[in-house]
Length: 507
Ligand code: 4AD
Ligand code: MG
Image (cartoon, rainbow, N blue to C red; front, side, top):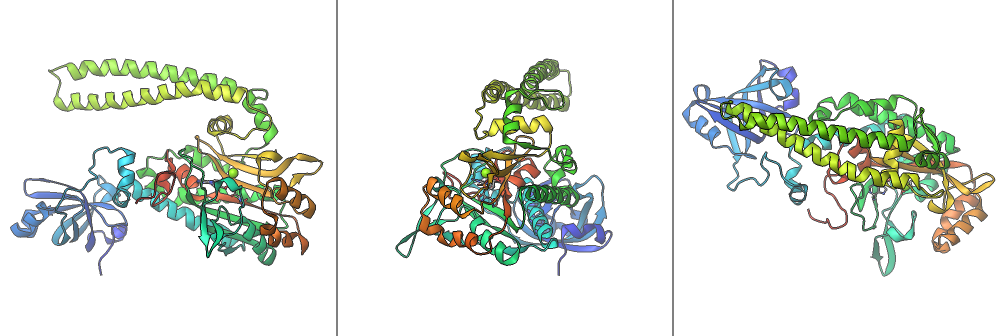
């Protein structure tokens, strides 16, 4: 049996064998330094000619990136190394050495290139960390619901009817009849909730919109709980507990992964506080600058943001000017000059990002200031709203006309429905959409007609209102949007092992 790098703390000063791949290697007189990855972690392994002999040393020297090897040696504590331990190698056995150069080198590559090499990109330390956070989120989601007596159910993927609107359906052929890849398991979840009380689905869902934004996938994983005898209030309380529970668990169990991702966790820690709950109408007032939050309007916040970007650009430019003097000084040490050049490159990138923000902020301001009463929030509006609170925000009571047919009308106000969206901070936007469900058979049939959905396909769903109808509610969390937020990934493509989105089917 071999051991795993993650077990090193309990193997200190003992002999261990690890099996893995070379992530990086360098050698200097009589020593080869291999950064190994074995799936469970990364560790430096040192091969010394003196210890292993000339033949094995030559073999170690010939190892290139992605060579697969088993290494036996002594585990030593070394605070300076990745993971805090190092393997002093006494023997090695080679599984394979690539005969061509590995396409992904430690230098920077563009995301388009990396996307095409996703099958290999997954091995990089950053992607490795993201996939482990994703795994912990999945475990946290199951733990949360299972501990509360929810039954996990699998909804069908091939369906005969739409759930979230007909324009986003992937059509397929089902023995000669039209069928669609499911957009949501909700309607089936509602049926199961009437049998089991508390349920949740956890499965793939599909959306066919030809969207190329950084938050859209054609295939994504959704978690959809559905609760009998729950109203909108209870739904919101559950969503809040749920998000807080999963975020806290990941902060607790994925410290190393979040560090690897250089994730500043300040915003994530704020989930401990109550999530602000505002109606859609209040959100519109806040956006337009008609309502202040903590004494500040959205327009004032945006103006302050514009000023902050301008100040920061000026500071970066001054810093660059200083460093350019050092870089040009031929009397200065090479290392110092190189360091300063690297800092200049970083600062230039920061300026480019800030200039991009400066181009966008006036558009955001414009969109916020003129936001329509019954509008759906765009990316920038969501960012503005969450910046006002610096925490996940719940927006409820939405305009009826922009939401799905199944949402319950607010009593005495048919222009609004009891829907709720949760907006994640730091520009991540909507991560959860949910609602209390319409129970009135006549309203429901009218809505199905208004949404131009085929009534016969919903007959079974209407039965849920004919037999034992009760107030009920539920929500849907997009797994990848949640992963992206937790890991601070700017594009959702890195939050799923293999992306499926407009223009991407391979690999
Ligand atoms: O808001 P949505 O469309 O709601 C539903 O599907 C309901 N049936 C949920 C329910 O009440 N049971 O989608 C829910 C969540 C969104 O908040 C978002 O996180 C994610 O699913 N999502 C997507 N994620 C990635 N790519 C897409 N194209 C997504 N569309 C929705
Ligand atoms: Mg939604």
